[in-house]
Image (cartoon, rainbow, N blue to C red; front, side, top):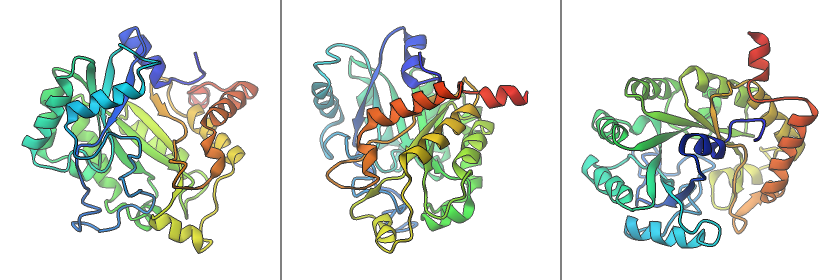
Amino acid sequence: MKRYNTLNDYFKTTFGKKIYKVSLDGGFTCPNRDGTLSKRGCIFCSERGSGEFAGKRGDDIYNQIEDQLKLIEKKFPDGEVIAYFQNFTNTYADVEYLREIYTKALSHPRVIGLAIGTRPDCLGEDVLNLLDELNKKHFIWIELGLQTINEDVAKKINRKYPLETYVKATEELNKKNIKFVTHIIVGLPYENEDDPLNTAIFAEKCGTWGVKIHLLHVIKNTMLEEIYNRNELKLQKKDEYVKKIVKILANLSYNIVIHRVTGDGDRNNLIGPLWSLNKRDVLNSIDKLMKEEDVVQGKYKIERG
């Protein structure tokens, strides 16, 4: 057991076994890409909508699941999986199309539930009603790309919605007892030192079931690459990042499920930080610092009472 509440531990406690996720491409776009709000997206978002490891775009959802299962066949030949609709905005479509692809994924005999990545401003009443319907029958969670609660930084990264939109979305999801995960990025340009920490604490206050903490990656052909090339971005050093992660974990209640504490950059398109490519080293460094400082998830929160 790690010193923080990992998704893997949650699965083993809840289902009594290991569960994998398979990443799918539902053929979506994003209001921040199609011209509704913007045409360039958030400054860090890649050409694939931050879904480099998802299934083949345009393929049938069921077939994508089969293809993704083949990739993990050696280490996971017959277990159950979560179907993860990952890239772009996976509730940004007609509700009947959403029903069709979600149902198709759930029809696969090895799929135990859904994870759906989206924006807080793409959860209309019809979508929420569909999610409510599915949630009453299946294991699902929604992933919200908050990234930061610093409104000035949110504008500069071209997020294109105010913090209040996230708050309202969480209120609606909480009313329907739909689990949600909040995405947080560490290392955003223009952010203050404790912005990621304050974002995590705020997400907990809003009832988040889990958090996904990402290291900011500079990817080719993004607006972030342009900022980096103008020398307006200081890349995180590994030790800086590890310290911030440990501080965040120490300030979150132990019941919050930690879905991720670093990211997987596509090595073919990653500009930096290059140290992030050694994910195992990053994870080990977090574990090592937590042990050295005798930190467990929730430690500082418990000490404050």
